[in-house]
Length: 137
Image 1 (cartoon, rainbow, N blue to C red):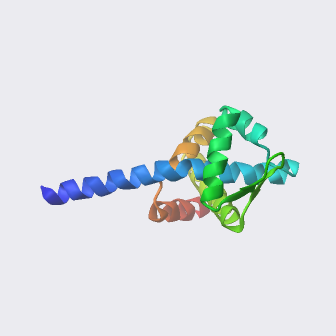
Image 2: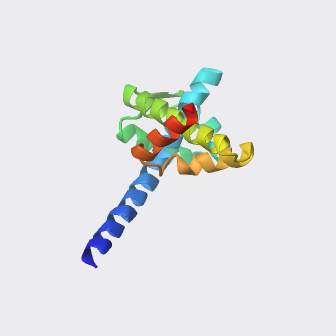
């Protein structure tokens, strides 16, 4: 009985950890996309994309600065650090693997877009590897 409790506790800890990193992952990925598409990432664009207020974005950006993922100065664009770029690239690749897997198993494109957005943060590296292999078949 205790082993099962410990195993469940570990599972819930993994889910909590995924939730804690989800925002940082989404923001670094979006900052990279904005820079690639428009040449810059601004707080106002992030707020619009995520449907949140400017103060919410500013709070998250301050957290990402503390975590060493972005650089931000008043009245300037937001830039990814090398650490932020690595995270954004990893997240984009992981997202594409999950999305392509869902499409390959017959999930509707719009549903796959929505589902991939949540699943990507909770999929283990082992499962992601299997998804990637399945995508290549």
